[in-house]
Length: 221
Image (cartoon, rainbow, N blue to C red; front, side, top):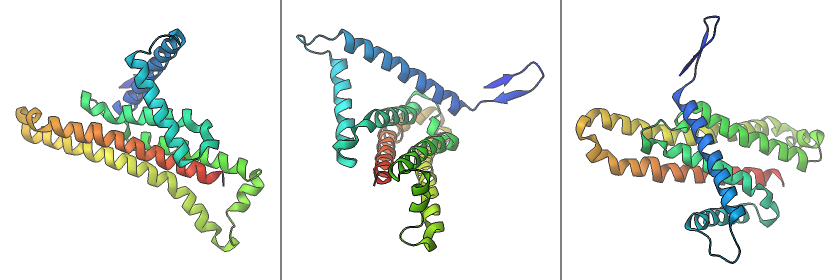
């Protein structure tokens, strides 16, 4: 998609970025619908199947946070729910014939940097301020400060490459199969779409969120 300005200049927006905006829009509408249904729900009546699914999802996220971060960090549950929802929906767009936003490294890196800045903000808070945060890089001895800094920077890079690499690989394999098989591709690629787009997509979103929880939890120590 290209945006053209009156002066003659233009900005090209990749399809993956537009699809990321689409995912945000869909999740926003879903959140509004869920909010309305919860407000209308009555205690003396059994919840609908839709609300049962939402309840299962919320319990799943709460159990993840309790297992990986502890019960004293349940304030991070909404953040983890938002992260896993966005990444999972973004990863499975290939089933609908759309490019997964996470197959674009800029999107994967943005997600990893989002977690990175949360981790650094948490470290500053738990260290008692910026001075304590900077001092933490010199532990146990000041000599290894460069190694600690490199290790910290490596976390978002490894997270982004892991997410991008797995989703991009699946998308590339499916594109090659569709190109090689032509009209017969639906017969072969249908079950592979379920694996690469659905199973692998949800799995990678789970792994990303698990890593985010581990890093944030470590930042509070």
